[in-house]
Amino acid sequence: MLVMQVLQQGRILENKDADNILKIMSNDQAMTILRSTIDTPKSAWDISVMSGVPLTQVYRWVRRLHTSGLVRVSGDTNLSGKKFFMYQSKVSSIKVTLTSITESVMEIS
Image (tube, rainbow, N blue to C red; front, side, top):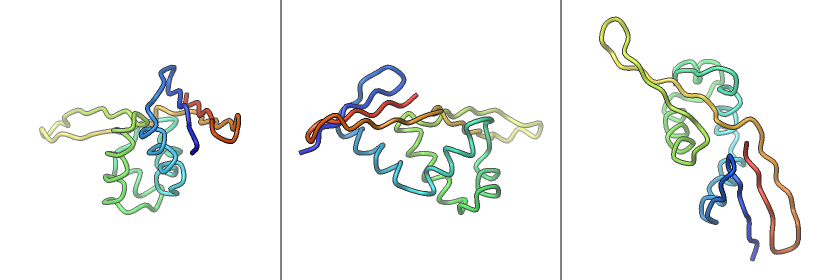
């Protein structure tokens, strides 16, 4: 059994969270969303248009990324009173270190 210790912005995550983050890292759409929001916050529409990821998938992945602590969500109201949300990656790097057959470390910063 592989045990993975995950350090996310200085805190240690539980194994189920580590498994979730590994699944996210293995998904092209999720990684595309993270990459596209590293420098500046973007709306779901902007992410979809720029990345080619369908809007419904953007919303699904942003929710999962936010729950996992990988994306920051900010909101505001436009001049017509409609709410909108912007999404920005909280991740600038992910480093996985294999330390032995049964234990590994993942650092997210």
